[in-house]
Structures are given as C-alpha cells and as structure tokens.
Amino acid sequence: MTNQPNLSGKIALVTGASRGIGRAIAQRLASAGATVVVTARSVDRETTGKRFQAEQVVAGTLAETVALIEQAGGKAISVGADLEDLEACKGLVAKAVQAAGGLDILVNNAGFADYARIDSMSLETFDRTVQHYLRAPFLLAQAAIPVMKARGAGWIVNIGSVTSMPVQRPFPDYQKAGGDAVYAAIKSALNRFTQGMAAELVESNIAVNLVGPSTAIRTPGASDLIPSEYPTEDVEYLAETVLHMSYLPAAERTGFLGFSMHFPWAHNIQVMSLDGKTAFPKKEPPAWSHPAIPAAGV
Image 1 (cartoon, helix red, strand yellow):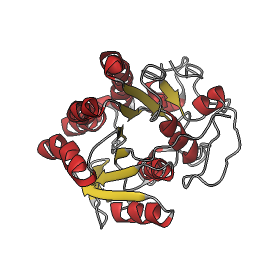
Image 2 (tube, rainbow, N blue to C red):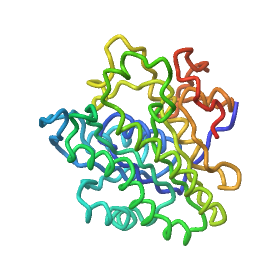
Image 3 (tube, rainbow, N blue to C red):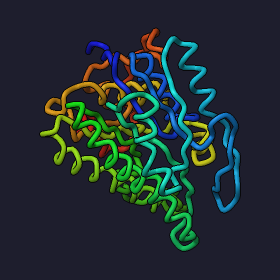
C-alpha cells in the first residue's frame, strides 16, 4: 500500500463543501493536515436552489462542515460564495487567500445538476450547467494559478463524472429517457480542460487532475437523480483519490482522469475514513461500472 500523504502546512480551497462529496473531500484533506477553506452558498443556514424548474432546499451548511472537521482535530475556515454570481466567483480565490494566508490546493467540486431532455431544457438550465461545471473551474483556476506559481507548486483537482464516458450501444433505457446529455457533455469538456491545463502548467510544478465517481455516490444533492435500486459506492474512495491527486510534484502525477473505485485499486492506495483513522477494505471496481473508465487514470 502507498504511504499516506501529509498535507501539513498546505492550504486547500474546496467548493461546494456544505454537504456531500465536497464536504467529504474537505474532511479528508483536513485529516491529512491541510487547512481547508470551505465554500458554498449555505453558510450557516440552508439555502434554496432551482432544480426541475422549481425551488428546492437541500440539507447541509458550511457551519456543519467546519464543526465536523474541528471535532476530528482539523482546521477549516468558512467563506461563503455563490459561484453563479460572476463577481463572487472571480473574487473567491482572493478571499480564500486572505482568510487562510495562501493557497496550495484547489478542488473544483461545486455543482447543482439540473437534468432535462434537450427538447425541454431551458436556456437558463443550460447556462447554469456550463457555469457550474466549466466556467467556474476556469475562473477559479485562472485566479489560483498566480498564487500557486508564487509558492512554487500547486494542485488543482476537478471533480468529474462517469457520464463523460462514451454512451454505450445499444442505448440503455435510462439514456433513451434522457436528461443528462448537457451535463455529460460539459463533464466531457472538463476532462479535456483538465488535461490541457495540466500540459500548460507542468513546468510551473502545478498538477492538474480530475477525479470522478466510478459509479454513483448517493449525496443529498444527487439522490433525486439516482434510481433507488442502483448500487452506489462509499464517498470515502473518491475523497481518498482526491487526496492522492493533491501532494505529488506535477512531474510525477498530472493530467490524470482518475475514478474513485478504479484509481485506488490500480495504484494500491489504502483508502481511509474521512477522519483518517480507520482503514477501508480494498475493493475491486464493480462489474457494472463503465467499461471505458481508465483503471489507472490517463
């Protein structure tokens, strides 16, 4: 098994950290020693968001995330931001640097998927999907790069999706039902964005990688999109994969598309609990995961 990374002295910014995958990533990075700046719209109370053309409230706040990290002995700082607000998005990295004293790791996780078929999707939903999953990662990376260059190293991790893999034939029933075409297209673009940025930044010792679930993770924000009978995976495997994308020099690990069940298996990584105290069993990637997923990352 690989050694556990030590992020002591490092500062991370994790977007969409009020719940779900973002919260788990923040907890794991903090348990490895990083000071984690957590950001979302829901600071100390839950806020509404639009999905399926209606306003919904999804559980989770940054205050809860900070409390969980501090209870486990870690350090976290809350900075509220709405990434759909252009000026807030542009200014978030500067606020994080001011709050924590620097920035070494950026995790672009935030999103609020709003599925709809192409023939019924509103332009607003299309634009929001682009904003969350491509425009915001671009703006945040653009702001973070000078800070990381000045510090001599950096790590950017984008959160991807298995929907970015090619559609299988014959078309499965859920693909015929539709709804995820735009989301999947933007996540596919994020794959290429990640690898292109990795090439641009490798000589600056800034690693850029992508991590996605191998199957699906049932979170408060995603539960409505996952059929009740679908077998999901534990978020700890994804959080551990993000951690292992956040410490090696860029020359050793950059431009990877890593998936949560595949990457730890292929690289013999010991997956730990979010507080870093309990070892999880080594699990082979499930047979029902997409056959095009690159096991070792590409």
